[in-house]
Image (cartoon, rainbow, N blue to C red; front, side, top):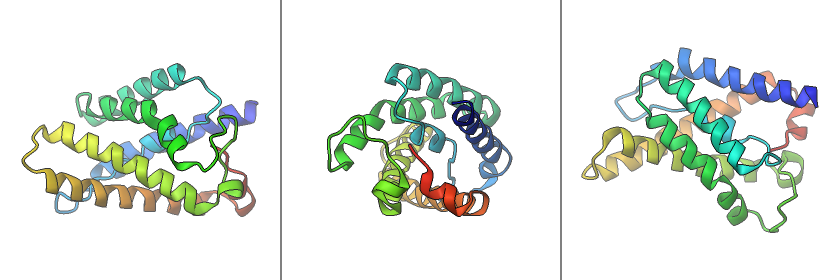
Length: 174
């Protein structure tokens, strides 16, 4: 139990530092502006009740927004992702088993990658719509969300393959 809690806290802290120190500085022609911090909420264990996940998402995004000076844009998108996370999982899973844990060993890398991409795309779409605040640039926002989601997913998998051993990668449970 202690190992699981320390692993969750380490992941949150690592994603926080990575977002604040490195990823916030990525802005390539205004199209690539990835956000890695929602991966913590997306991959948070399903065993926690949804109300606690919403509170954790709010507090985590509040700290990120405070350091990024984004004035609540991240809070709105992160809490929305925490709210719709169970519905996305129900939609994607072939079995409607609530108690089943997600793991790379059971569902495979493709399922986890699709799940992460869909949730990251929704997050970035909401984030950029809220940040820009206008709907007349809808194609620009969709392309920006698509490219930022692909880059965030790529960065996540690069970090996983660099810092997590082969045996631990198969055991990762969501």
